[in-house]
Image (cartoon, rainbow, N blue to C red):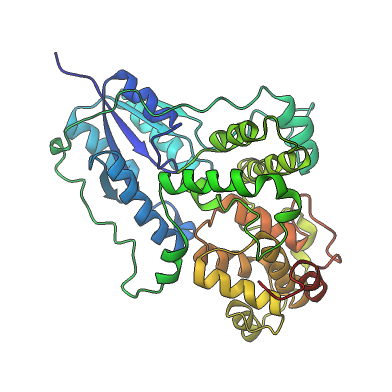
Length: 414
């Protein structure tokens, strides 16, 4: 009797541990794992160059974990998936949900198409602690301010689900049934500008686990104060691993709770978990307000008189503003694909509050340069610093870049 096979579509969940879709498929029989690079539906939100570098290496690591069984495709999943199912005879598909507007629109269309083909489809939550539709105000409308969203909304819900282990048994289907599936995705550019980025990061599930372990051992108990010192390893730096799903927020949430047992973590633990809450809030806003990446969350900002100054924008992008902590941050971004969060706020404030350049200029630059470029977090954070977003400070509140440098980098170590 033939073993039933399930097609597992990996997306932003490039891991074996705590992967609900993969675990479900493995419990039913064999799995055929695939990844589709979709530049057709993403439009202006196709991945930037730094993200493509990360994805290339993350997929290599995932393929190793799957004993070379991962099949790669490039194009429109709405066309590719039905063709794969027809050629293989597979009638069951699973995936973990995504929340970007272009992905939800695509997935909705794809679900309808697969249902017409009588394909059994199941989706799972592998990316968020709480589903966006799960946390609402008493009147049924979404929250617009973080603290009540997190304290009165999220923390009053049932606790996040416990993480799953790796599948007890993982039987990879014979990929020879596919006519294609080893397509080169051409994610790396022809010019090697990423050598310094490669020295900084270890993409993949193992790299995510190692970084979490290091953070819990060395930085969690000093997190509340240490996270603001940019030359100090006081943050988790898990954001790119989270974005690509090499680790789940559930794994991080419960690992932090376990690491704090019997220790006076207190405010440090609460502060760190609330940062996971901010990530949730960004996805929550993007889900309920899908225009967030391109339109002001507060419409009154539509009349703001932004300046048009290409030379000032170039100087900011290249770290030539003359403000030491800002220029250091822009160099860190270029050389490592990352910028310390405190410095992101300072550099962002300088762009929109001092130079009076539109926040979308900053969001677009970060989108291309950050290895953790995430549509939800990038959009919500830039609107926050501009004053046009949710939970935003008033437009006239400005980060003084000089006093910020004196306070958080007094000896210029960063």
